[in-house]
Length: 310
Image 1 (cartoon, rainbow, N blue to C red):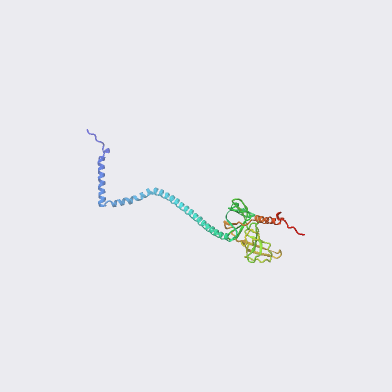
Image 2: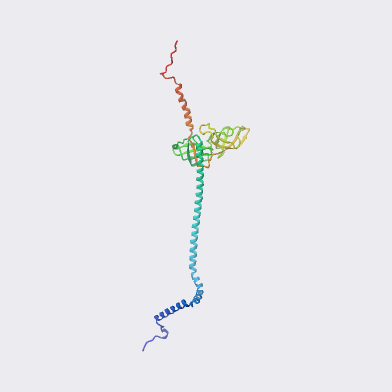
């Protein structure tokens, strides 16, 4: 008797037959769809039905992309902002440096012109730093005794007198500004030749004109220049302009304040005038008697006085 499986477990067509059937069906549908476009409507209907499910399935991916793009764009924007800020700062620095260089070049040209007008050799110096002292106004410059600078030499700029060298080392020097309390400069009023002495320290940044009579012919706006009587400052260098005059008849003196004309607090380059220092002037004065001493001595023995006849 031939064995046959129960109808419940009865197998269908062989797998190879089914594969061939479905391959044939696919080819037929491809041909029909390509030639007759018969499945376009079905395809559109299926795509419409499946679209919501596709969007739901793509939500996690889109969310991850959105977050990644957000951070990427945010980082890129932050980098661009930082780059723009850096470029703006660099441009501002470059502009400031260019303006500073232009100002320094203009001041150096004026200094060269001032050096040509002064009848004394001059050394161009640059300010290294300002000595911070509550009781004095000092600058440290970049040249010293090695460059022929010595204490007592005047310092000027294109505007006028800046101060005086008070201490030197081989490579640097210390300059006391004309507004320093220890500085006094013999001056004369340019308008009428009235002489006086300016001194600093009374009011920061200002000069006082001391020991002027209350009825002295001096007015606000008068220009004060060096008189040259001290032998240190060449004659005619601008020093200050008169800012205020208070006449006190009871004391007999006038209280006069003056504003320096030099760029004491503005510039970095100055000229040191290599004029004779006070020590050199005193030395020269002391040498004069020694030069005249031979004339005071008795004549040499070879020169005998004539014998007088009786």
